[in-house]
Amino acid sequence: MSAPVARPRLVLFDVMETLLALEPLRQRFVDVGRPGHELDVFFARTLRDGMAFTLAGQAPPFRDVARAELRTTSGLDEDGIDHVLRGFGELPAQPDAERALALVAEAGIPAYAFTHGSAAMIGASMARSPVFDSLRGVLSSEEISAFKPPARTYHWACQQAGSQPHHTALIAVHSWDTHGALRAGLLAGFATRLEGRLSEVVDRPQVVAERLDEVVEGLLALPSAG
Image (cartoon, rainbow, N blue to C red; front, top):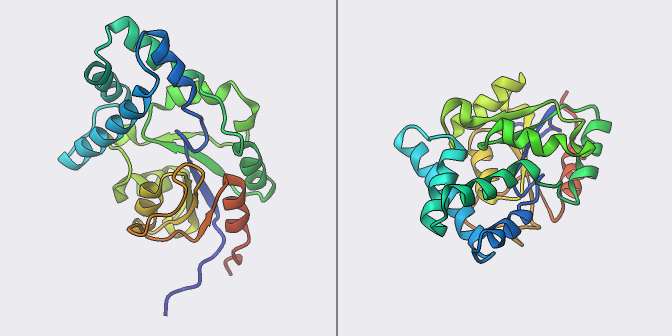
């Protein structure tokens, strides 16, 4: 018989699209003469290739992959590419992030941002808003040359944060991310506000709700470990 699921002792929050909104980058494409919809193609291809490089053995830094994708997707010159990439350091908080982080802090549970993006780049965006003051830091799997979701990325994050996987929860708006966390032995909470619903081909997280704060409430409602 498997052990009952217990309330997490540490929480990892995915960053891009989960805690930070990418939508302002759309205007940066328009600024350099490209259609705003290229943001979606660019970001999807950046994730795809970063994951493929990881599967092949080693991934370049997120910024290098993103720069290459901008050349391919949009044909921008270096000034245009730099203009788009600078936007990653100025992303605003998602509307549901503030209450989600406050609930975790009020419960006395340490929380980290966990990304495969640049820790410096993500940190610059987060430093712009007091919403993120309760986070203990930013963990980036760039340090191990990997994009999520291989198990080693989640295990590395747990090790850095000083927590065991089964005591750690990953919260994200990407079902592939929660799927990876579950397969790595973590708990997971999935906010459906980006994808609309949980896909039938991924493992079901312990909590599924529309908003980040609702996901946190669900995780906090789990019984405490003995």
